[in-house]
Length: 56
Image (tube, rainbow, N blue to C red; front, side, top):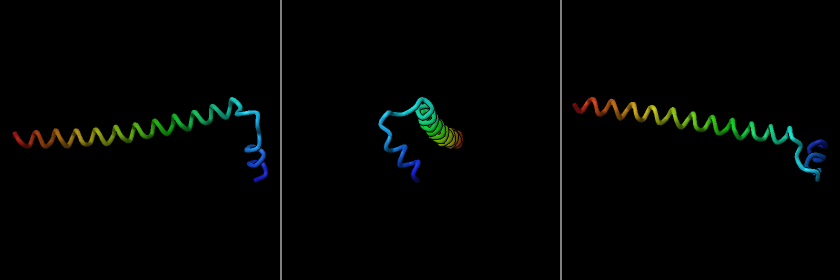
């Protein structure tokens, strides 16, 4: 915990590696979210196509 307090007390801003790690976390979360949304969209479209084929 002392290192966490030391990190929080720093006033010189973030280092480059910290920006890189933060950007990687944000980008990774975005990729996972878009992928999950895309998979849900594909399954909904497939269900819609199946329903349309059943109407014929």
